[in-house]
Length: 412
Image (cartoon, rainbow, N blue to C red; front, side, top):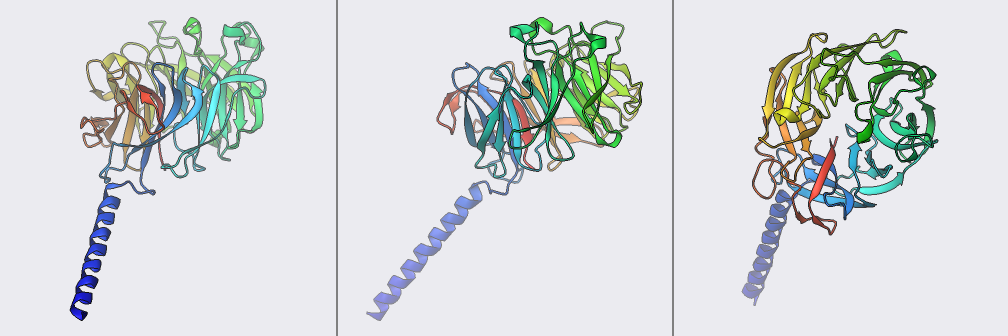
């Protein structure tokens, strides 16, 4: 009897150990809650489903590196899913918009494996159609709004807009119009912005999201950060082709304190003397083609998405007045590169495309000693190919379809 009892005890112990081994194995194959993640803002390519946030494993040491972990859907039918913040805020409250709807969502992604929609907003302080978001030193968001209410612009919107400071609950803190009587007939639709606390300044660009106005944006504006007073509106430098300065979009603070601005005409403008009464702009580089997208500065290199090369051009901006090409990377003969974003934790860039479902979302390794990009071959989707595919699949939020990604940001 004792022998039978001992045998039973050993059998139960063995089962327990096996169960424990199984649980350990399952944990080893599952992403940890404290892992590292890529959050991609996407919508339905067919515009029948809703906008959603996809969470992808971005930890190179994880067994599920490159795999989709979860999604959270909004109640917004996709129209034009567009910008997120460029870097993950310390608060973990992430802003993202569907631009043509004019609606911004605030996500709580403090636990990236359980993202939540906290709230949303549309018009604010007399302005509509928010576009870009940059964090201020106080943790609030400063956002560009393309239009003021009324006016003679597209769909009844005005040819000027404004800047609005917003807290993480979606409440207005302060706002200011970018209308300038000295540029009364100009298109002044705020697009991107750079915040320079060291000189108490904000730089914003004016570029329209309306195709009819795409050639009309040619100006930048300088603001005092402390009170959002508009100090200066100025034209960008016109290069010899009279084209590369058109539609200025994304300003980025360079290592020397000047601000580089990418244009849709594939020019690179450099703004200097920003803290003075007479800021200056100079066209310092022209990339091939047009429709250049979101750039990223890492150290003394500027990485520019260039659709004409189906990838990226890296500039060495150590001599800010005379950038030189350090390298370029072509992803395929069809890739339409657009968004880039830097992850200091793993030293990789995210790249999203937007032309076809074949435009995968890639992670790119960046050699900062030489300014050279390379595809991270280990970041693979379930199809076994490098990069993440937004082609048709069953998504975790219960929708089946083809996604179209835009903004992307890494967890902290």
